[in-house]
Amino acid sequence: MVPIDKVKNIVNKYDALEKELSSGNIEPKLFAKKSKEYSNLGSIIDIAKKYINFDNEKKDLVNMVQDKSNDQEIIDLAQKDLNELLEKKEKYENDLKFFLLPKDEDDNKNAIVEIRAGTGGLEASLFCADLYRMYEKVCSKKKWKLELINISKSEAGGFKEVIFLVNGNDIYSYLKYESGVHRVQRIPETETQGRVHTSAATVAVLPEAEDVDIKIKESDLRIDVFRAGGPGGQSVNTTDSAVRITHIPSGVVVSQQDEKSQHKNKAKALKILRSRVYEAEKRKKDQERSVNRRNQIGTGDRSERIRTYNFPQGRVTDHRINLTLHKLDEFLSGEIHEEMNQELRLKEQNLKLENLNS
Image (tube, rainbow, N blue to C red):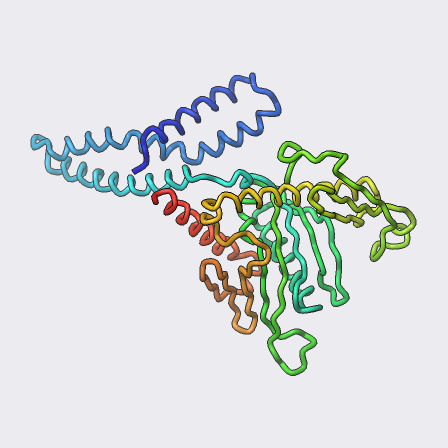
């Protein structure tokens, strides 16, 4: 049973926002935020109104069924409508419960994704590149914008590290489940005995932090510039364009040298640094709130093994929910990534519901 007062609050809030947004008297800075809130409430408003009207509809239909002066055909139709209404109520309740669950305040943010090759040498770097291509395809399928921030290539043509920003609606709410250790089991191209090797890559998904989310003082930063090295051509290495920024209080260090412009490298480095510091503070708060930790699928800890990609058997297994899909190629191409993500979301929602009802 969902408290009717909470459902009425949804309708009242929706109506108030609709009036406010149509008035034209709202500050530009608040317009986007309130529009997003209005859109979010709009996804549940019809169900909320039907839930509020349920008792009246039920009463009318019961009266029709019990009124013996009605034709039998009318009574039968009313009984059918009543049965359907009772079935719908259960669905309405579930939808409203999920909507009213406590939400991660960062769910609607963009996300910075960092993938690093782990154990497994060159094979791990190739797997790191495979994961990047998988996320590229997921973003393309969902029409999200992917912006490459930093990339470090390996000798084998893979990636030692790749960092990118994903822009769109509710990006972090989807990608946050990707944080952790991804393990691959396959026969490397260089393996002559046909033996299966195990390698790993670490994925960290950070909510993109804006200036309003966390204040970083200039006095807390040490900024060093140096001459860029590695790929990029002679012109990259002729000026001190590379930037290293250290956040002194937390010890977080970010280096950036992909751009030829020192200013662009500094801007990219600050974007990553802000999100890393924000995530570190968020993680500290979550650890202090043990209830929140029980509500999460895994811990979001990058040292936690979350998924195994087994090429010989053509399967991918998520260890947090014990789900195995025997469609590895489709998963890596982004075709059925949504299927696993939905199961992860559902599991987390059910855990939150259990905690809410306990």
